[in-house]
Amino acid sequence: MLLQIPNEIIILIANELPLSERTALLRTNKHLRSLCTADFYRQAIREDGGTQGLRYAAIHGSADIASIFIHHYNVSPDLRFCDGPLVQLTCLHGAASRGHIKLIELLADAGADIQARNESGRSPLHYAARGGFLAAAKILVARKADIMARDGTEGTPLHAAAEKGHHLVCKFLLAQGAEVDAMCKDPQNEVDDGYTPLHAAADFGHAEVAELLLEHGAKVDAKIDQSEWTPLGCSSAEGHVEVVKHLLKWGAEVNIAPEVPLRLAVDGKWHEGVLKLLLESGAEVDMALDG
Image (cartoon, rainbow, N blue to C red; front, side, top):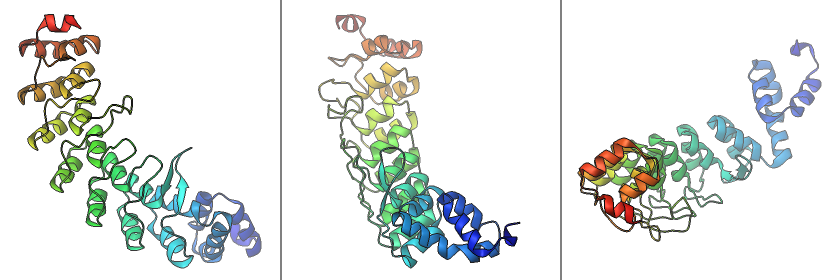
């Protein structure tokens, strides 16, 4: 049906469509693609300098579209766009957050800033680590991404991967030299320092990651400033039985003051399995009651 419409009208129709719908239109057949593609890209450049084009490429992992905007229309690979209501990202952030390997490689080859930060101070490696995209993390590190990049709360990619329980990404980052006891601000208030990747794993119940960090020398009784919570306190309060088991196995102090894990467990989830483990490991009821 569209092929019976004059070419000029088809181009006008295409130019009125949102970018994603225009792209879908061009995929329908070869005639439309050959007719509209060049004008489609020129229109995208006229509208916003290619911003939405790179956003579309980042979301959908389209290295071909990104390549056309960057190499044929001289759009900067570091052009920023909104991904959500507030966050300004580069195409590389978007690609890393979704694990789009080919697009990451294309952007890196085009000179994209591997260390680029968004408003929260997060780098593409933070996004790859948080999403659990091991291959993406490997490419970024191979391209000299800072393994110890700090975001606005001083969090590292290892913190991001530990919080989400991405064991293989954590293992890779540690092998590349990430500091196992790097400290950032407590995400509960973004004020207290001393929050380690082990705190993150304990907080969110990732026993396998906690074990990995401990094997790499993480301090089992590290304390958050001000609150003085340890990883055992975090996991006890949240009722994470398996994490509590691992921490106790590695010698976590069960009666550490002032924030005694048994009291935190009672004040928190009141998890029977956690209470049983702490009591069997010598938790003193009187110390818990003193608080």
